[in-house]
Length: 158
Image (cartoon, rainbow, N blue to C red; front, side):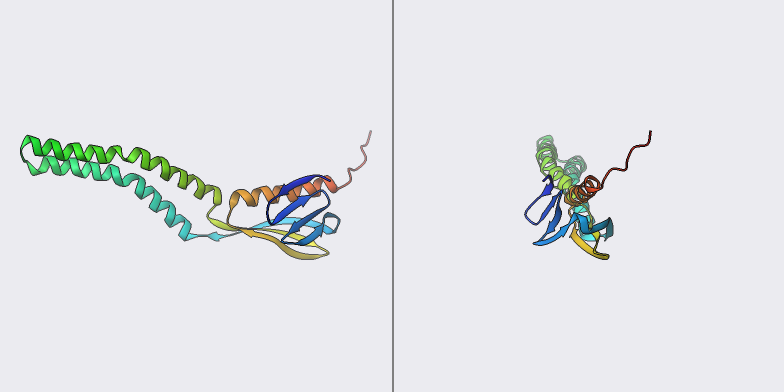
């Protein structure tokens, strides 16, 4: 038996697809398809907030430099304000690295619900519903590969 995918709730093998203790033998599955749900505005707003947080220290630094020049104080005060502003701007580097990691994970998870459906014993059955785009793709492709491997090859014509 070949295992195409295996995690805590889904297992796809050359014999069956098992989802949360429901077993669907491949011989009884005639079709597999997927459905994409609507966009999650919450996820998109979160991505926007991450982008704003990445730009925040740089904007604060530019505003600080502008205020330092605009105040027209002594050279010491102006240099101090500009220096602090530059330090705030430099803080954007480590902060941006962490935020890029969150942004990358956000795209891996996806911004919409995805569903894997099969036709089992003539009836449509939803196997899985997940917002995780990576997991969805792995499971969907595993079911496809298992079904393709289970179909007999037609004889070759000479």
